[in-house]
Image (tube, rainbow, N blue to C red; front, side, top):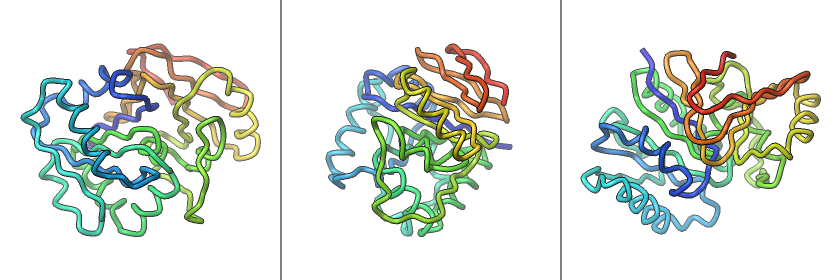
Amino acid sequence: MSGKVFLSGGGNEKQTYGIDEFLLKNVKKILYIPIAWKNEDFESCKSWFTNMIHQHKKSEIKIDMIINLKDSPNLNDYGAIYIGGGNTFKLLKKIKESGFDRRLIEYYKNGGKIFGSSAGAIIFGKDINIALICDDADVNDVILKNTKGFNIINGYDLQVHYNNSQLAEHKKYILKTKNPIIAIPEKSALLVENGKYKVIGTKPITVITSNSSKNFSPNSEIIL
């Protein structure tokens, strides 16, 4: 058995409202992980996250925030885990060094529900070096050497904040790395469930390979 992973292209709480509705359905307790955030003002992160949940009229949901992954609670106590955006390299380094990656994947395989926003989504692709390109590019300040992601999308790298003007830059990336790309814009997400990939949100998701690019509209299934 496996759970659900929502891989969001990012955006503010109004842009992701419909996607968040999918995540929060039947959730009573959620674990929020904001450690990728660049300025580490985590209390402001929690305030934003709390307001985001309350706009769905779900003030009864209990929110736990964790900064030190080594001291993380029992993940099975949570109906969902939300991994926020920021610097992708910083995020993956902290996850791997703490051993949290193994616990997170186990949670998913046991039926857990995970939401990755922006950087929190990129780590589920094959390699996170894709975060180095385009307008929202990260810098590998933490000197992360092992940039392999969780690879739950069949060997594809995952891009966020995507728009069609970036296609040529992504083609160059593929020529260099040989890794095809799933490119997700703000306002949309890729739902991974039972080995299937579904577009949710309001904008199409683009699958880019060395010789083609194809848009998949909301509510459609992507065959990889």
